[in-house]
Image (cartoon, rainbow, N blue to C red; front, side, top):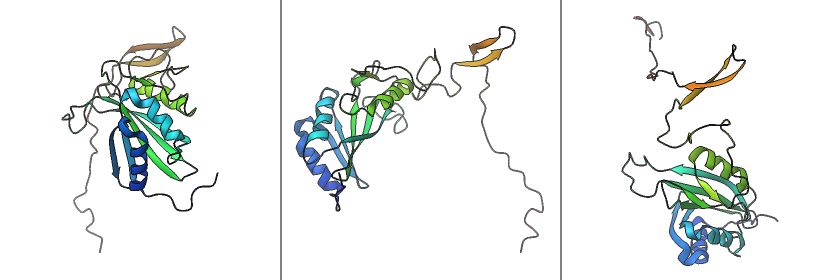
Length: 205
């Protein structure tokens, strides 16, 4: 498939996507030449299928999918749902892009449907979002951690996860194996130390 020579403008793409999604569309935003659409979790699969198949959309490829934690958005003044999944879709045939967002309905147990049956590329992206944010992708056939170590506790990209982690690992020569221990790292402020000589720069003309 050859890309279109003159792609539609962001506003035209937004209008087409809005017409295709209809009442499944919760919000649409066109800014900086990009289109972002938000749908409810209950409409996520249906909306994704429409975006892939509808003649004016034809987003054949999922090029990225990531989790988002809004818990400290706008300095903690955000009062919406906490966890979100954002997918970036590409239409090769129409030379256009769209961002699809969905918020998990339950902050304590974030769940959305898996897109793996619509775009195979979602597989590892969803595993990453599960690993780092704890978002469950219902219908994923192999949902397990992909980046953190075996037995890792917690989800390190959540805003409330400590930067030092909960445990540290090291090799114990006596036991001849890797062991895990509570973190002993002292929190510290990393402030650069600036040293200037009294005559610094005086010889420069």
